[in-house]
Image (cartoon, rainbow, N blue to C red):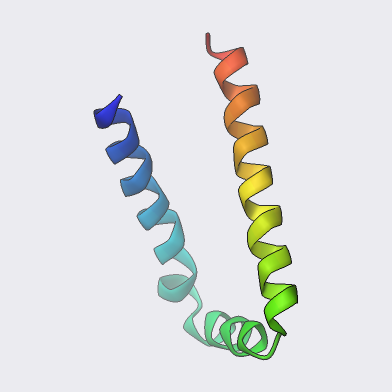
Length: 65
């Protein structure tokens, strides 16, 4: 299980690095817009992201069982 988590973390880092590498100007603009959001909006985005990730994890764990 630890190996799977480390591999997932490594893959997340690769995916997170794609935008700044491929299109730094677009990434910078997106980051600038994100910084202008209120705390509540940022929390909502974070919660939505976590719920989507958990849902995807649950569905994939059922499919690949």
